Amino acid sequence: MRQADSEPYWNTNVARHPGILSAVPEGCGDALDVGCGDGLLARKLTARAKRVTGVDSSPEMIARARELSAGQPELTFVEGDFLTAALPVEGYDFVCSVSTIHHMDFDAALIRMRESLRPGGTLVVVGLAREASPAEWAATIAAAPLVRITKVLRRARGPEGMPVAEPRMSYGQVRAAARRLLPGVRYRRHVLRRYSLTWTKPDG
Image (cartoon, rainbow, N blue to C red; front, side):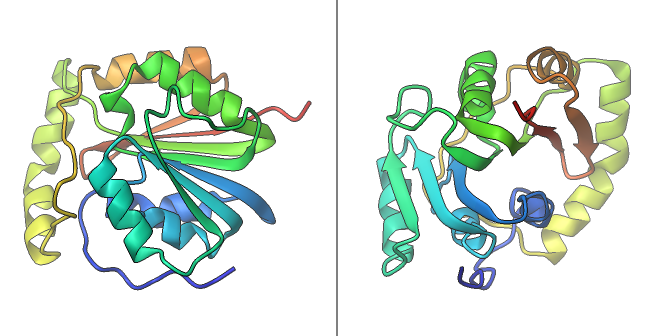
């Protein structure tokens, strides 16, 4: 397994990469990055997993990912819709997704991620949601100054051409759906306007 490459850019998605990488199980054989974009996280995952697959529906992003990952046979990139792409059932020890699930049907995507995991495997989803309750709005307003300052200081930017979409589900809806589909899931809301779901598939 090679060492991850240096950070070419930073944004509020990249900020979650260390937590994702720390969740990769020891001895991970196969990892899947859903909505891999230009492959930055997938390349980092090669330091923790023997084989890494990235899937993305954007032809431009997949082309960029393949270009940046040339000469790394442990990396494979698949262009297509995650919900219908030819990916193995129970084929991965680790599945992750960053700011992608709100582009898809939430339940269908989470179910397919769950089914993609081998027993004992780990799933980490980092996502966006919208504010719907007074408590959710209060948390966003309280964090806003820190978010702005952090983005300025870190010169936040991302790869050109990355598809964007507004989240349809609220934080509360995400939490409820995740708990229904992934019993025992750990839900966390993070300062930089992201939530995370961490779940281990029962062994057997």
